[in-house]
Amino acid sequence: MAIQKQQFANYIKQYERLIITICLSFTKNYFDAEDLAQQTFLSAYTNFAKFDGVNFKAWLTTIATNKCKDFLKSPARVINSVLPEDFEKLVDTGDSPEDVLLKKHSKEKIYILCDKLKEPYRAVAVNYFCEDIKLSDMAKDTGQSLKTLQTHLYRSKKLLKTLWKEESM
Image (cartoon, rainbow, N blue to C red; front, side, top):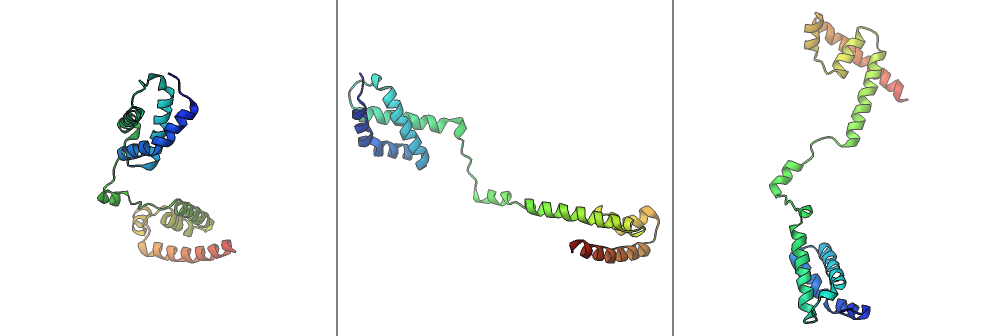
């Protein structure tokens, strides 16, 4: 049995709200319901030859119900609910990409400036500012006194401050 396009358009106008309501009751999502309603009408149109001619409304609602059940069973449509206590675990404690870039740029600039210093200030500055080595560890590794390294660090800070200002101009 063939259907006229105008006759089917009338069916769509007559039953579209019913079909969307059925789909919405299954999916709880208006956009999914619209998609499923459209699939329902498309399926009804392409399979109209299989319609027995009795109670179009019942036949159409059956198609819509089956489309919704298939949609809900679809493995591609798995919904994972996030509980409020799970949101605490999702908090990003890391730096933003901008912060990471600024830190990287600053570290590179500090390394370049430290490298411009003369010895013994260069070694102390590079180890302390770039390698994050504590003065006490440097004293153990080099055999120099902690007081000497503190003096070198103090002087290298002053020199770096001057270089930083010169670079910024």
